[in-house]
Amino acid sequence: YSSVNGYNDHRLDTGMHAGTHIDSPMHITDSKEYIYEAPLESFIAKGCILDVRNQPVIEMKAEYKKLVKDYSIVLLYTGYDKFYGTARYYLEHPVVDLSLCKFLLSKNIKMLGIDMPSPDRYPFEINKFFFENRIFILENLTNLEKLVGVTDFEVIALPMRIKADSSMTRAIARISSKP
Image 1: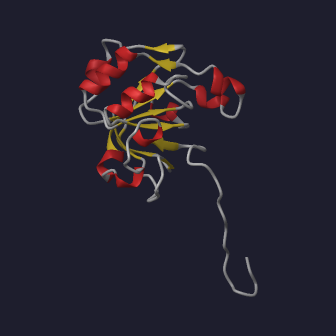
Image 2 (image 1 turned 135 degrees about the vertical axis):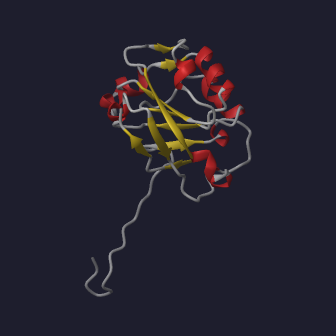
């Protein structure tokens, strides 16, 4: 607080991949579209949570056919957010199998949300698959355990209006009803 000028002025200097953020196709493809140029509808949709804890490789399961709705935002609850900031979080997180990715593409999902740093590891073929199909990736989520069992909620995760490949976001789940 400046007693001379009478107002606060804080500064933020960060990369766009810190904390909870959305990666867009520009992140690792030749897309020229900045994240702020994507329609806001890309970042708001009915949500779906899949409990995928204790699965080093997250594969397609028959039960997902009933759970995942068209044009939704799918959240994968791995429980890995408890390791955030550790080497384990970045080096040992689960990976998403291509079988699940292809299913999610068939459902025209808008975004995949995860409580880990990436859906895969180098050379990032799963990232590329999603981005080439214009599916955004919402990374480093927390508190997903609170949505397990919730069947009706909306996800809202808007990027900042910046010229960047990705953006920090305040992601929320707005619960319509509880079971």
